[in-house]
Length: 145
Image 1 (cartoon, rainbow, N blue to C red):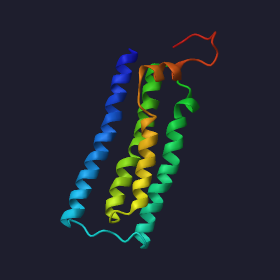
Image 2: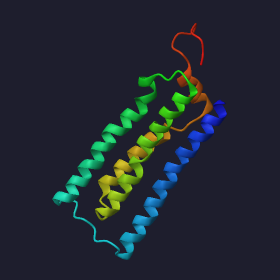
Image 3: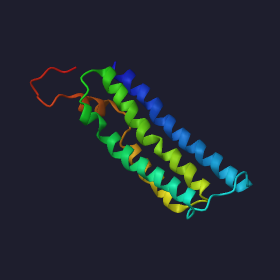
Image 4: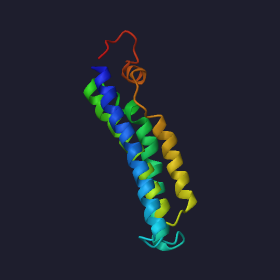
């Protein structure tokens, strides 16, 4: 059963990476072909977009990394839901910041936000060892799931 949960979580994990790569390729193509006019990063709209992505990253990354320790799942189904939420919360910051990076005309600070999200995303990789560690009760005498 644990292997099935890890396999399902891997679909979400690698799906977020594919989504980030698609965002990267599509936005690069659109910017290089002149499909849209880049927004000035110093304008009010550009500053608002930057602020929004940074705030979302500042909230989603720590919350996502701490989610399972905070909720303490007792069943595999609950663990799968929380791990999926963790992967999506952190993983979707990457494509969002890549899109804003290109939308602001390759504004470098947004790529740093994507890089920070990618590093955090790496720590959400589902493995059997991580599942067992996170599901292990704090009390060694307590029963397992």
